[in-house]
Amino acid sequence: METALKKVGIQLNKTEDYENINPFTSIWTRPRATVRHVVEEKSPGFIFLLIVLSGFAAGLLSSLDSEQLFPVGGLLLMALFFGPIGITVSTAIGAGIYLLVGKLFKGTATYTEMFRAILTGQIPQIWLLPIVILWMLVQPETYFLQPGEMPFAGSDLLSLIFLLILGTVSIWTFVIQCKAVGEAHRLSSWKGFFIIIIPTLLFIIAISAIVAVILTAIV
Image (tube, rainbow, N blue to C red; front, top):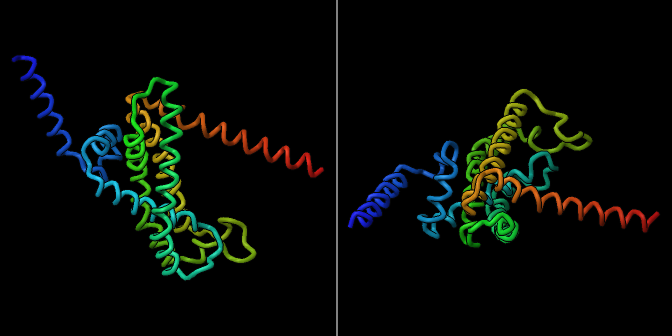
């Protein structure tokens, strides 16, 4: 009877903690609790929302300092349509890779848990949407690469501030991703870091080897 009451108490405390979590804000200060909340509690509709928003953000960020081939309105529509598709594919592949590598560290995540965890780790990028859209509209000449210019050569004070914000959020996003992967596997954040970095290094080595072979064959 006492054990049952303890379990009920734990469950009530867990529910109360989850009620105080808003994933869009708590991800900054309570990343592991936020990831666990999304993994265990959030509906498929919320996951779809994350796919749309994070894909939209990724699509817009991919156009930063590249040549402007379409009007801003067209780029926004393309990012909104193709971004979620790209983020779904990349997250699906990443979830599979991190799931397999995590098993080497005795991780216990399922594929669905890892997929949700990776998406949750992308929430900080969603906060960049207003900044990126404002930058595109207000200063397109510094957001897009101009003919004859080197990347980021035409940056002024405002664009440098935008770049500083983007860089800071990107670094923190990586930190949160390490925590998210670790939480999905119920491992430490450091193990989450190695689960991410090991396949990344292997991919770089493989690409470098392929390029070296091609260059050797050409020469």
